[in-house]
Length: 469
Image 1 (tube, rainbow, N blue to C red):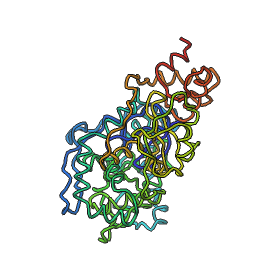
Image 2: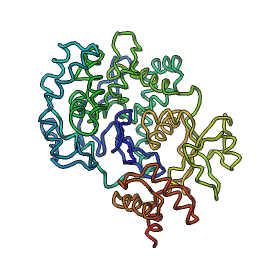
Image 3: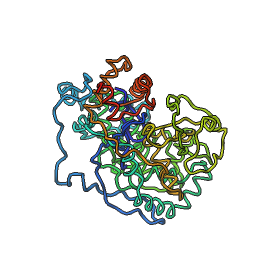
Image 4: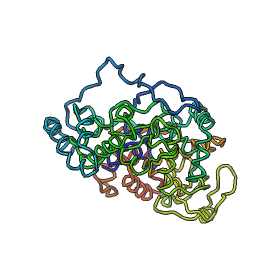
């Protein structure tokens, strides 16, 4: 599989707030999902607390979520779409039957992490597997969202207005964080808004149950064993309570969706109360998110990227993350800022992204864009965060239009596109319907062979050309 499954703010391979993309590391179409939760996304109600309030007050999940009296949908009982041997129905049933023993077997590892026996028994007592997660883990969406639709959903007037309220209400906390970490407050506010719609869409699954399920059942047991044990460490230390650790099916929790291992690396006690509370404490939440970005390489006082006008006849083989050049070099090739303003730092290195191909806008992406992609390895997500941040500080929408007339390919068509590229000798992967970097490179090579702009954009027209029609 070319794609990565997004889990909270970390990737774990194959397969995520308000919406996070299924790895759009290609200028194609993004699946809308965030925090490990594909659409339709559960929504929640609840107001952002006043500035003097000590917490963020996550609310009960409603709307697309079943009512509390309605049981969650059961596991389908079917084999997973990935075809992995641990995702067959029989393997899932066998692992589920051994769940209690599996959890108990992790005690020695827990002890090595200084988790007390009393804590281990308290927090694992009565744990049962949530097999519905197996369907979510291996879901294969039939249709995806075009990047312009994705951006329309994530960056809208209502969310921008809420973001400005958050920035005003927590101004002292944002001021302190900018001084200490040098991370742009608007980016932090954007992540908060995109990941949980400002604490109203956090998720309602038990992190312990989800990570224990995935640690004992399915194809990512080693990865989730670490997440489960890290969740136990957080509870053992007393940073959070079990009822606070509720989130996505993959275990991401809190308004900016930390995985337990990410919490361990980045969470800080900003207000000195002895607890690192990224769920109900605004100071800790803002500082921990900033610490995450800072440790991932955030460059203070620099942008994430610029919308650019790409000249006609441009060689789109250069639109590649591995082909970074200085902005001055890009200018020499004819690229200009879409708003007509000069580039502030011509010596900065950037790569060209053409997320909608030659018919859509281009973007020069800087180091901070790469940092956002460490939070979520999807170019569509990182672009949404960067653009949202710009809008919060008062910048206008993108200048150039998107090719909204383009039709999004279905999964069957994506599979066919990969198969046709393979038949022609351009694609050497295993067709899976997920359009990643390998597919983009193969498509570029095909486009170059027929004399069309080699932008790697998987349009319906390009599928027709591959069909030879």
